[in-house]
Length: 111
Length: 112
Image (cartoon, rainbow over all chains, first blue to last red; front, side, top):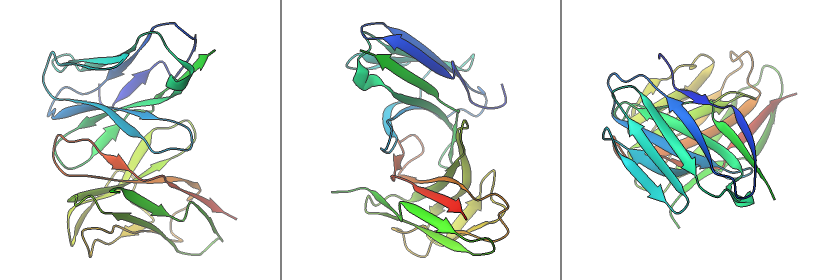
């Protein structure tokens, strides 16, 4: 993996469904893996910053896991709600230089 | 309230003109970044600055210039050398190597 890759590109689910997205990244020179939620007409907001292999973080119905050895992270949303509709971005950090972003997963939750 | 302010929200540029996008933060963050987003693509890094009076090129710096004379401010100039400047531009800042980034609301630049 040379770049940060996210899948799927877009997802349509029904209210109440649980869903998950994948972020794959180069495992070398790893500092941190970030997840952001970007709602339409708003700024991206951080969900999680994870640094250690095996990290699991949770915020309400949203959780994330990290595997730095194989270079992937999963974001889970349990019981999706219409307000979860957004683009979810992951980004790999390599120190303070910059964050390298994936192209995002666009989630649409139908009521 | 602390945050990042980008202005203007919408900007129209004629062919051959330089335009400057403003980014100001009052979060006392050392590092600031400019990203560009095109339809269907992720955020691509244009320039970043880790400290006042210092900045580094990102992946797509050609046709852009920046300055960092104050900690709070990191303006981006889109020059006439940028062949396809129509895009959405996001400014961000953060304070440490493993800390989250904070973003402005973006500037949508259109060449007319």
